[in-house]
Image (cartoon, rainbow over all chains, first blue to last red; front, side, top):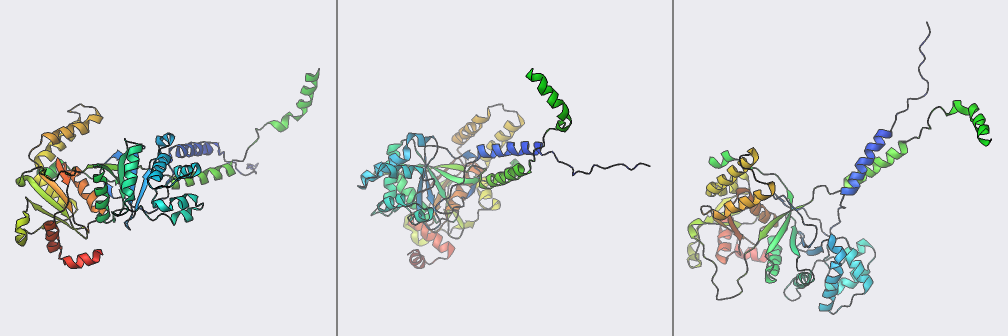
Length: 212
Length: 221
């Protein structure tokens, strides 16, 4: 009886469909991704049932950390084309008698995260090359009544872009005292509408529960 | 004549070219796996959501009187320290600071504050829930984006639900604040606002939570 000859060479798996699939997934991820930005302070947002997405532009976001520091961020959306960030800094510089050079303004525009630098250290902050070096200047925006830079930031931002909306991003554990302070500062500048940034959580109530 | 010569040449080698050249795709797959993993880990998939809140306007004119609301419909919620939650109905006059009513304690769970709010807001909550059920079952046909608007209308004409005043004690947390506003949305409360805490209410919280006011003051500093 003749023996059935098995092919001696190793079985070759055709990887083309796998590559195709991977390409599709990769393209999808690359297009949908928005890089997670490193915030100067880690913040775990509280949960809510709200399903309204964060607006992409015309926002100023106040980051309130657990150690009572306040950071400010401007959107990086279509407004970057309007050069919103450098305008704000230039205007701030005028108020505090600091002249910012063109390259410094560009640095400020490109900085991808929230900013919590007192105005007198802003130049050093922008000159710093390393990220770790920059982090040293991120001590939070001063907001006591003697030197209320946060109020000035808000005022200037609203002058530069009147359509700006205030967002508040706080940690669940942030003390209410600082939140109250910030809300008061905003109310003094006639900002009463806020967007509180939260994570989505489902909560349902049904009819029977109500009728009980 | 060049063509013919070429044909002759290829004729002899035809056997070797039977199979298409096989490219080894394994390194490519490896690379792609790596990239996919990288993107998956760095992507923030769900975009953060926002919850809107409008605070009452500050009254800057010292002679202007604050708007009056009926005490019988008022429910005061005070965010206490250590994730505690207190409430009292009606209003307290600063004159009876020696004889302050006790605060009732509750919590942020569905059986706590949510139950309480739903009980007081039953008529409106029922209307909203029925409206939602009708939309889902197809009894009412309206476009999806005007549902929120319709609910807002229902809330506007309601005059039975409580008027909730939210106050926060200084040791409360930001998470508590978001939680309570969220609870207002869940229960469909039509009228709620966040107001400054009065000194006598701070006192009430301190009595209820067993805080020594002077100790609390030193802890703050």
